[in-house]
Image (cartoon, rainbow, N blue to C red; front, side, top):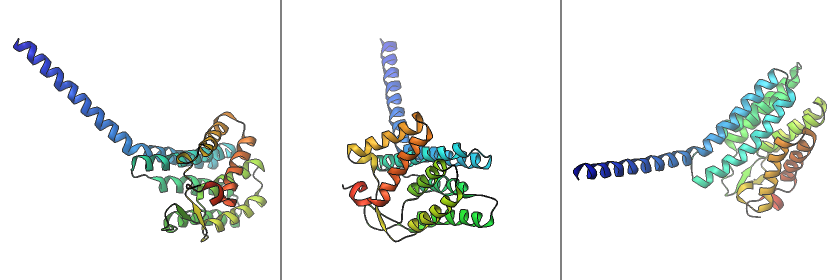
Amino acid sequence: MLILLSFFQGANKLLLNERANWVHLKEFASKNAANALSVANMLMGMASILCSLNGHHHASCWLVLIGYLLDLADGAVARMWACAKLDDFADFTTFGIATSLILRTPSLLDNILCMLYVLSVYTRLCFFSSGIPFMYRGLPCIYSSAILVCVSLLTGGNMAVLRILAVAMILFMVSQNFYPHDRVLESQTWKKVVYIGGVAMVFCSSFPPACVYYLLWSISYILFPTTLWSSKV
């Protein structure tokens, strides 16, 4: 009888320990889910940088678009679980350094433009908090990055077009204009459908339709920020 009682006590203790471990694991996962997505975004950025340096232009642009999706997802997860995130580090890698490399040529002026683009992303991330709920100050770098990489793919890397566009994106990012928080995954159903469409385009489509899709998505955010993309709409 004593042996049986000891057996049940041991089994109960083991079950309680397993439950406690599961709770700790779930808590750890919820606190770090957003960071995992941010790290994945950062890895896309680093892979894009390596692709650019090795002349794989299409791959580098494609990886930036995957980072675009990961960035929208990590913000939603961070707000859902109220956890800290490494978002700015990932954004600077993917939408700053990696994107700027599509502007890199042997020309000194192009390299200066490349550095200015990186500095504008850095400035936008560090100093442009609006202090107003649900609003950004300056165009979020995710959209300027998507526009640049999509146009680069669609035009075959036409530097004349990219130079003009890069200057325009720099001005948008450092402007004092206000843009709404783009809580795509926490808003109306149609915005979630747009996001799912973006996933499908990146993984199931050839690059021209995908680029047009992301280009329209990003330009619509610039042209109709409050009308379409406000989290309150």
